Image (cartoon, rainbow, N blue to C red; front, top):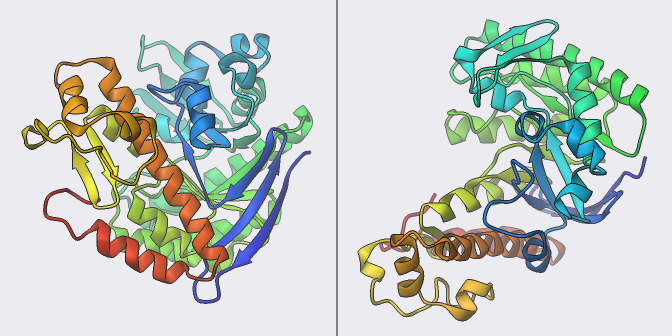
Length: 378
């Protein structure tokens, strides 16, 4: 298995750290933000553009790729890397989070998850073993165990039953993964909702299975930020320091800073691309809704010191025009900008940790990001 994780620099004040993941398709510096390519593409971008921005790993979604175009077809194409022409690393989630959103169309049992396709209503079943087969067919470098992402809010009793079942599924996933062999690495997912004792118990049981890395799942599903940060703090104390920590589905620029401070190494989120499609751009001064009328005659770039293709070549006024007349180029430009913003942010955070100034960098970033009344911040 071509997997190695090493910590490079540990911040002296916080749990922030830099490191490096060695995977079959190259090295990945951490902390890292992974753009989400749900259906085998990061929306509105090409693989070449993602490489030029500087991303070394992207995420695909097992649930969606299983339904369309199908994992068997992707296997015939040589796996996801070959199918989408991406020669850097990939991670696939297990589909558990997507199935959670199909509450009226799914049934969860000890054996797995039965669900109806959101596309045509056809019936399907995800057992831990079947998900491993699908993810092996897809061929990502890092794959995730099948878990149930408990909804928020839920009772402690439900959270415990769900976390315990997810743990048993993780054991079954690991056994099947080892039987299938290959170069892929499998991560466990800690569940337990917002209950500290459940989270700690679940994490310790997963640690005993000895996964190469651990994800923190079941957050960013409606709980308040205080609960999220408390659980991540707990995981920083419980999860092994020598293995990567992945906070799934998070988040905003401020979320990245807060959770890197708490020892998280890996992130993914649809936010930069989804906001881009709604005409919203991230800047150092907050989130700018470029489609708004106030930018009709604003001939500045989205962000003055940004080196993305959009900011080097076009004005807010032009991008606003494109978005409002529904020209595809407008969404492409806001997407390229937002992805560049996120990649630049994470790169600067790594540099700040390595230089021993992370806390000062975080303070300065937040002060500027939340200062302006002209833009929104999240």
